[in-house]
Amino acid sequence: MGVVDSLMVGKIGSASLAASSLVNGLFFLILVLGFGMTFALSPLIAISKGEKNFAQCGVILNHGLFVNLIFAIILMVLVHLTSFLIPFLNQPADVTKLAVSYIQILSTSIIPFILFACYRQFLEGLSIPNPPMIIAILANLLNAFLNWIFIYGNFGFSPMGLDGAGYATSITRWIMMIVLILYVIKSNKLKVYNPLLSFRNLSDKLIRKIVSIGLPSGLQYFLEVAAFSFATIMVGWLGKVPLAANQIALNLASISYMVILGISFAGTVRVGEEFGAKNIHGVRRAGFSAIGLAVVIMFTSGLIFILFRNYIPLFYIREIDVVENASRLLIVAAMFQISDGLQATGIGVLRGLTDVKVPLFFSFGSYWLFGIPTGYLFGIVLNYGAVGVWIGSFVGLSGLGFFLLFRFNYKTKLKNNITF
Image (cartoon, rainbow, N blue to C red; front, top):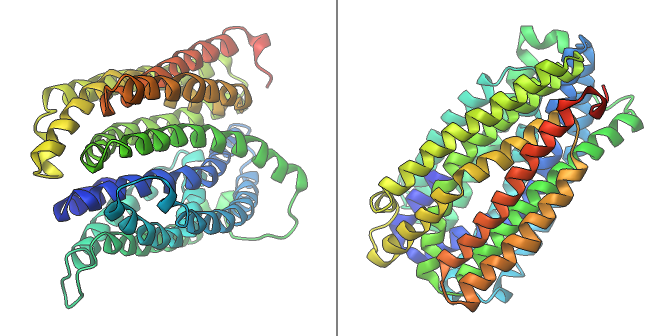
């Protein structure tokens, strides 16, 4: 959906594209805390399924909805308040003006985004990923249609520019949530898992379990998104042309990342099921299958970035300075594709073992003690510009990716290292 928005917003100028880049970084910086909290559901549900405790799956869903609804309300308020901080981020004036109203509109989409993610994690924990996928595909078509109406002004609407993309995204997310909830409630094959909404008889122990897995998971993704958001802010110090190029390259890198995030979710579920069944060999097979597949996919995407770096940015914008900057950034993006694949799937397979706390500390070290300082050194101090900032991302992702790979191997190599 973000890719569609960027493609359509890019047609109205670099200022709108730059504002979109800035807002998306800040928006997901906050949203990812709640989104990460939903990640606790799929391993717990997969483990319960592996144990043949089917009714417990619905109990976990209801507890997850309760926890995440509270988080969603808090995050909605935080995102709205963030709009008042944007003028102090030292961004170009025209970018700042567009960004403030855009992020305020997007804040209304947080509750449906989080609740959709809860139900999606429930289904993915049961190895039923197709319904959310189909809904997401149809939602992208709806989002593009609403963008066409609101951004450019069609069917009698006045052109809203970047704000129109915000309205389209928010409306689409509410519809996504409603459709997925109706599917889960009405599906006959899901009745055995007891998915009906009920906040009665909530267990403090299960709530604490969800928070103990979800909060570190959310913080992990927060640290990653925060690092890329801060990198975006540093690029913004260089002007709106590098910032617009940054949005294009980041948008393209997010496409491959979304594919790998899906592999990561699958790794979480398969590892969780084998973990629940107390099958250590199955745990290793599932985990390394996910990691190996991620490496192959990311190697391919990196090759595509290098070969077509001068052409892909033209789908977003025709301003030659922006295109040239974006093509250089795509070379660095290609360099960290495999590292990004390792860290994303590494986090996923370790979450299937409910191992989230140690990876959290290494995420902090990799991104904030190595990645960001390196990016500042090369990008700002040594004056390599946006490319230098992205070199910092390469350093952070590489360090974390290889640590997570070694940790999963260590945790599962000896049975004594893993507690069933």
